Image 1 (spheres, rainbow, N blue to C red):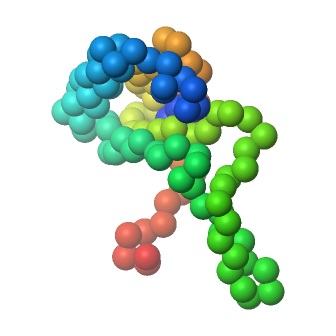
Image 2 (tube, rainbow, N blue to C red):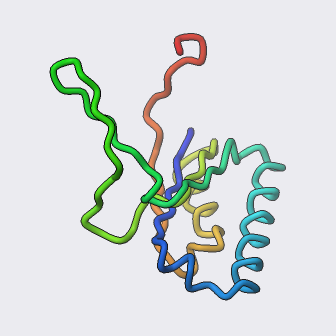
Image 3 (spheres, rainbow, N blue to C red):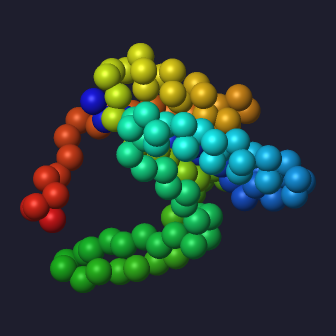
Length: 121
């Protein structure tokens, strides 16, 4: 079964890391990624740009409008996400608990209920 693991952060948090600590955090994350890529359970790991670079698209009366955003009511935003394929929820939670950022931040684990077939896109 596939699960998405979500990590939230904010610009203040990322900027607060001293350079050497940030390098250590990146190295720990890279080690995590290699470990689960080798088991075949990690399908992908993606880091998002900060919220200031995001855009929002809304279509009203058939006309798309693109605005800067999202304008969040909170400082936190979806900073990165993982797609894993594991035997079940217990394994997904075990893997999520090994994420380096899980020791300092909450991470969310969401089951993927369905996905579009590749040949229909």
